[in-house]
Amino acid sequence: MSKAQNKQMHSILPTVTSYKLIKFCYFIIPLFLLSCNDAKTKKTSENTETAKQNEATETQVNSSKTILCFGDSITAGYGLDDSTEAYPALLQQKIDSLNLNYTVINSGVSGETTAGGKSRIDWVIKQKVDVFLLELGANDGLRGVALSETRANLQAIIDMVKEKSPETTIILAGMELPPNMGQDYTSEFRQLYANLAEKNNLEFIPFILKDVGGIASLNQGDGIHPNVEGHKILAHTVWETLEPLIVE
Image (cartoon, rainbow, N blue to C red):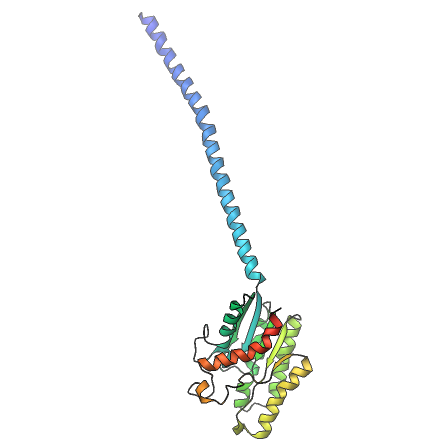
C-alpha cells in the first residue's frame, strides 16, 4: 500500500468509528429514557397505591364513633392499669367483642372536681364525640363543696357539650356519698343528679358505683376506689345504659 493510500485509510477510520459511536448513542439513549420512564411509572404507581392505602386507613379511623368518659379517679382507674382494668377499657373490650365501630376514650383525672371539669371541657369537646359520659361530683361531696356550686358546674359542662356538639348523646352518672357527710347534704347531693338528668333530658345512671360502693371486697384499701373486680361490676352498670344507645 502506498503512503497516499495509507494516509487515506487512516482518515476514513475515525469517520467509521464516529459513525458507529453515533449509532450506538441513538440506540442507548432511547433505551435509557425508556428505562427511566418505566422506573418513574413504577414509582408513581407505588406512591399512588400507598396514598390509597393511607386514605383507606384514615377513612376507617375517622369513621369510628367515639365514646368519651369524662370523670375523676373512678373513670381514670386510680390504682389500676387504666388501659386494661378501668371500666372504660372494659367497655372497649365489650364493644370490640361485638364488632361495634366505637372507640372509648378515657378522659378521667384523679382528684378532679366539677370546677376542674368545667375548666377543661372546652378543649376536650373539640373532638367529635358521639356519646359523652359525665362522671363527676364525688370529690365535691367529699370536700363539702356547696351543692349549688356542684350543680352549677355540672350544668355548665352539660351546656358546653350541647353547644359544641349538639348531636352528642349525654349520659349523666349519678353519685352518692357516705352517711357521715350528714343526712341532708347526702340526700340533696343524690337528688341533684336526678334533677339535672330530668331537666336536660339526659340518659341517666342513678349510681355509678351500684353494688360496689361500701363493699370492702370490691374496693381498694382506701375503701373508696374500686378494685379490678369492682370495675368489672361498674362496667356492667354503665353498659346497661350504654348498650341500647350503640347496639342497633
